[in-house]
Image (spheres, rainbow, N blue to C red):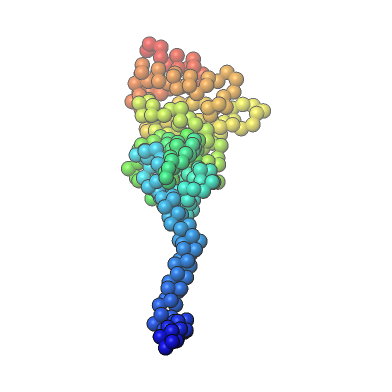
Length: 303
């Protein structure tokens, strides 16, 4: 009887209050479990998205562009990322390709973006066309944006003003010059000059290309032409040698009046003359008028 009572008493004691050390251990387990659950949800809500963004963040080294030609000294990708606010771009963004295209199109050295394509995991290929300097436009020193060292500014064949900070004094002899009285600029770097006379001269420089050297030329001049009675004043272009010899080119390419040869024909006649008579800066230039092919043929007659 006594043994049975003792066992019942033990069973009653076993269901009584827990020991303090047991309570502390259970509390620690509950707190740890709560921390694990909270960390899991915090990871899902904050850390994992941040890691995903970082893993797919668009970086300059992940963007491929065509090899930069030697006349461009700017870091185009760095400037596009800076000015186009691409540093926070994600390769997962649905608007990534048009955003990149727009950012590169705004760079003054980029003439056209033809295609932007994404490649896993975070690479982007940008196909684009660079602008090519074609001529220097003579301007008063200090005329533009604090420019003072060189009294000429670079343009391409569309008269777009190029970043002159990429050029040095040694580059002045690399391109033909353009001289226009009273010239002024209406647009910023990367935009057309804004003067139709500059646009016409730039188009002529584009037609001449690299031939201006072999032809013995130095400069394209734009002059007001009052020769047509009862007609609006037009612009007549002349080609000049370093020593001041001049011949008449005529109208800007694509703006020739009836009877005036197109620009390609003028260049062909001029090259034919130089092949027969030598560079213009080494010979005599008398009465050469590319508007009138007969003047070239007459000049080529045996003397």
